[in-house]
Image (cartoon, rainbow, N blue to C red; front, side, top):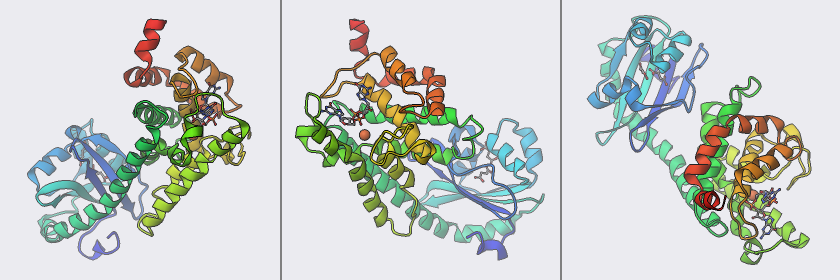
Length: 363
Ligand code: C2E
Ligand code: SIN
Ligand code: SIN
Ligand code: FE
């Protein structure tokens, strides 16, 4: 599209954003630019009500802003305007994308020059808007569908050795809290984008999906596993990665990297920073960052939860263990980020804990 439309309409940047099902959030999905650095990146999202896009969507009419600097002065709190002005963009044309009269997203054409757009561009775009909308919706849907199916599968898998599905919710929220904190560290700010955080949100719940391949007599054993049983247990990492690799194949060339972070997390979440983990005994930066983040979230949640083989520990005791394992099991930076997000972690723990009220009353 970026190359095709050049003959019909001027632009230096094309951006697309989608509206979520409940129509409360708008999320930048694709951005492509010829000569300017992208600041408003994939995955960047905002509550729809906080943006001026709400009017565009409700009216269903395209909008032209031919002087973004002036517009920005009048809308000083618009973060997205700030970001695209920082990219050097001076004018923009925003086109709502509709399928069956429902707005599914918006398309932005932007130029580094002022006064670029006029009604003739709108006439042109209105002719092709419905075609863009339909093909756009299809490609978004495939990913969403697969993710929904696989997350349902993960919940089913979890329900065998976890009393409720809350483990999954806690895990993803702990993981996202740690990732957001780490994004403030200069050495991670380039890796941990909004898209990366969304991948962590979507894929961290899948980390134990391989437990589907572990038989009840091992997974649900009330006591300690024998060395042979633990050997079998460890294969849940390999089985899980295989499941996601197979699912990835279904996507063919659609989005080859859709599950990359999911596969990393599933395969490597039991690796340890000091190289003493499994399945491969990887060390330090050999372990993907996503898996180093999820490892801390997973163990904190395992410690504070009841399992067939153990009772729940207090938060204090669990924190002690995490701190003790800093630099051993866990990446020290990830532990630091975890500790810096303690308030958030505790909030998640309290709101989603199965055992909290029990622990409270038993002291
Ligand atoms: P899980 O129950 O979700 O535990 C995830 C990880 O949390 C464990 O990985 C371990 O690193 C940490 N963890 C859990 N409980 C404790 C604890 O009491 N103390 C400490 N220091 N760490 C703890 P690990 O050990 O690789 O185990 C992976 C999975 O294997 C566990 O997932 C669980 O499903 C199973 N498993 C491990 N040990 C036993 C056991 O003795 N009996 C049974 N039935 N299953 C076990
Ligand atoms: C975008 O290009 O993704 C957003 C630009 C805007 O808010 O106008
Ligand atoms: C906003 O998202 O706050 C403004 C979007 C726009 O100006 O296009
Ligand atoms: Fe696991």
